[in-house]
Length: 614
Ligand SMILES: Cc1cc2nc3c(=O)[nH]c(=O)nc-3n(C[C@H](O)[C@H](O)[C@H](O)COP(=O)(O)OP(=O)(O)OC[C@H]3O[C@@H](n4cnc5c(N)ncnc54)[C@H](O)[C@@H]3O)c2cc1C
Image (cartoon, rainbow, N blue to C red; front, side, top):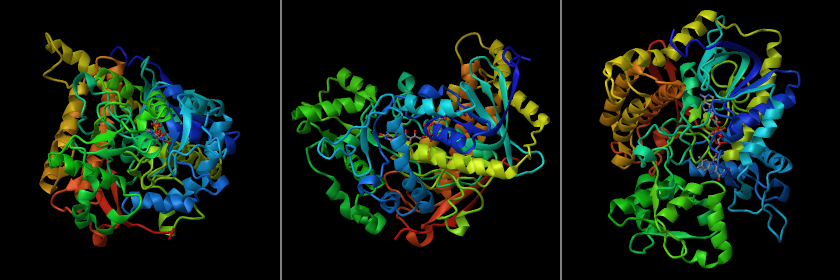
């Protein structure tokens, strides 16, 4: 036994276990308590829910609000919008379900103390765009976390969940999870009747633009480490649309958001020579995707596409024209406040690079790809839909239950439903929480059957990197490169390089093809073998080791899905050079995968897209 494996084993029993206390996890915890007054609801989080997840720094806008009280939009409108943006492919039942409930979540945020800006003339929430409302959101996350904290029976902060536990009597039923305390090394075994995975999206699976000591500067949160996908994948849950990675156009180097600039400040972009360029790429784009280019608003990926083509043609950099808008003192204030409430780093980058947007039009760039289910993208687990709205083929149990019994998800975890954002993720958490309560009530007194042998074996596996380091470090006289173990950072860089070069990252202009993907999978397979030899010098590195495990598995899913879909559905997100066009005849469908952890093999299939809203 090594230094840290001497930690205690802590057994926690729960009716409902929520993994990840970000937006979706807080929603799930809150709603589970509302419907399950007597139930034991436990939320486990690898950081501290007070400031964890993608909303940790705060936000300046809530991007999903219908405004039904004022007749601004209806849920069907949002389904049409998301479907259009995702080039026709969304789970309309799930999206509708979120849209019809999301306003009530936002009203709760306001009730709990979140300052929402109001239009002085109408008294309504101040709109930034058709779906976005503006907030003073520096404390958005602490406000939401307080509600979850008060609702939970127990919040276990600083516990990284590494594996789900399966019921030993029923092969396709979840029974809990295991993980470790990242501060003291205690081993945690959670036994639960229902588990709701809300562990965020995945950054750092593709090589980021910022490397070296700046590598934490990514658009999506660097701590979003793909657990939301790896945990269900390992449990045998079906995943969908994992090829649908997202690439964001953002202000260069700081990844400052552009939404408020386009929508509220009415700024626009131009190429290095001060020319409008999007219209130049119209015919070219139309030849690739047909009528999708004529949709309004133009899908996010296609707007990236025009920018990328213009840069490839040698007319970059692309700049945001801020000089005009910033002459208006009100707009100038809004422009700066937009960063100060959510991405202070962008303001610091501009200050350090002598960029005053009143006098200099700042550069834009496209990010490395991320995998997530809540933004303008919809990767994640394949979930059962709402009983009153989902087609029968999309209903096999409780709302938001995956293809594993008792295993639910929300937010970035659930696939097929883009444009949820912070409010929609919280709302989906609420939906999953309510369904999980029904599931638990229907189980009655039936208890989850956890195998002690299984969790004791997992304990050895989880802490092994500490042992690898303890033994292997004796072979090193200086530096960090060891002949017999890999440091988590080295493994991460190897993963990012494979994904970047073979699966369509920044260095290949997001382009890949079957031979590249085939080789990428071979290299990922070799990396996976080497993960048994990760070495962790302390608990922090042990967390990094398990984050890497999760990222590698999610990357494998992304690569298999990208290989399976033989078309280029979302130019601007990625390109299959061997199938450069959108192909609605063969690919107007979802892609599904299932991983068999015993054989290490993947099975892929298609699932139909049902258009419920006209
Ligand atoms: C830069 C940026 C800007 C954005 N701007 C907006 C905006 O303006 N408006 C808007 O509405 N939305 C915005 N979003 C989107 C919004 O933040 C997400 O949609 C939302 O946070 C997703 O919720 P989630 O619960 O799925 O993930 P998160 O909120 O990220 O929560 C995931 C949680 O899981 C925890 N976790 C992960 N792995 C584990 C593990 N193994 N064990 C235990 N815990 C784990 C994490 O620590 C985290 O707390 C933005 C996101 C980003 C990154």
